[in-house]
Length: 279
Image 1: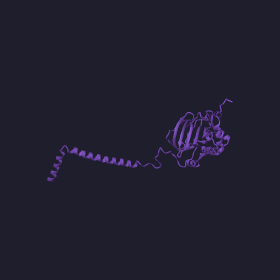
Image 2: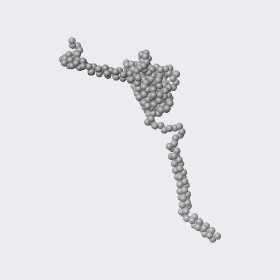
Image 3: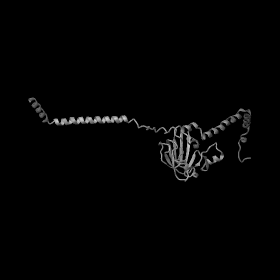
Image 4: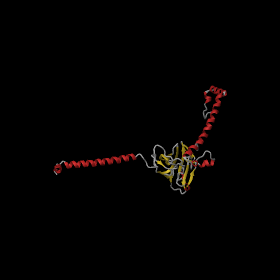
């Protein structure tokens, strides 16, 4: 009994001290703060571990690489082909004269070869122009003669061009998918006879190919089937030049040519100059 009375007195003496309760409160508060900090650190660590992972089906896109989809075939640059007429055809060097005449565009009093096709709605109304394939917009600008122009890179130096647009909905550097609206068709001063239309071209390394040969094919098919379009013209234009070189070299081999040059050099200088108006 005496020991219990002594311990009770000790407790009462401690309770009478002013510093005891604040010390208890501080100890409890420190414990609570430590627990809160521990829980927050655990949550932040869990979030950091989950950040690098992405949802299934999502991939990080590199803005410097053109967006392409394997197996994607070239479509018309309009939503429903049945509602449009072809008011301009591609100039084919292998076609007959009548077909080539239809593929000429008169601009600034000069007939020019059409390097693409031109589409107009049957009711001659404004219509949306869509991307023929997925890719990256490399040009979105306005030209004084062509109207608004959009160029899309599909990789492998394969590009599609859209012009005669009255307005555009894309910017340079944008990554788009096939069927995305690029802008609205309009009229331009380059081909006024076509009215409201869109001019569409497909180019491989800057050389135009016939879009009619490209529709329904993949970009891989186009790269494998090339050369098309102007590349044939280049090969034909190079042949005559190569054939003319031997002909130009032949006169230099004969001694008669040298004799004639020597005789002409011996004539007076007045005989070498042909002065118009003097007899």
